[in-house]
Length: 315
Image (tube, rainbow, N blue to C red):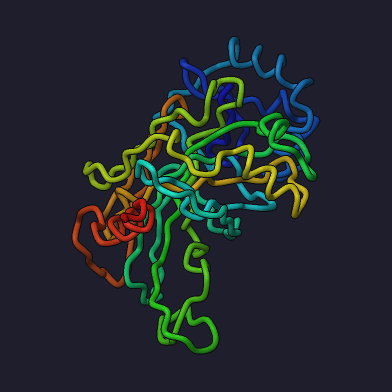
């Protein structure tokens, strides 16, 4: 099943006929907050599913081009990000240790929403196209063998990133960019820096999340073009690791990382589009009031640096 929100965050099921409003079906679980409604739907899924399936079959369908899809997970309690987390197609490369970080839930936007580049003076603003999933039931110290039982569904996401030079010194100067540095991964948490969508595809419809084709275009030019089979630390390991640190709750989100061979800049006037097998895709325009410019192509330097770090050592 495909679940989402449309227009004024009205809950819906997406079918081959179009978008079916399910507000009446889920009304007993709606506290007036879309994120809490989603969490209640996930928690009560066994009860709701047959009712949603019936609504999807018989309800009035609105044409997709007549509605505005919203982010399918509006404001999760936690957003966990895979750091790199791909082997970059290097045969015989040595896996790196698993690395995860948090990204601000307030960076989330939906399909066709605008990515706004901030005045922070980044070296470049990159796109990172990624598979994402949402937790379906509480997970505390879950073993990998049971981890997939805690996945509710999947969607597509883009980790927009402000790359900043590390020059040393105190503090964050994100508003003006007139300062020494932006520490850690804070450059990934600006408002609008996490487009997600187009909807949640429930886990039963994805036979193998590690066998999906991920693609991303900018103005029609292909950038990312890779398969999740190249994922370094797979979803069960991500869940096992983080559930051993903090309890994962329904509605929490993971982004699985990206293959950097295809990384490139986003700048004013661009339109980026992500597509993932079975899940589908969406686009986002980009605006930058400062009209900064970079070369419109794959960032060959960034890609080669990451790939070189994974090449097997030569005797």
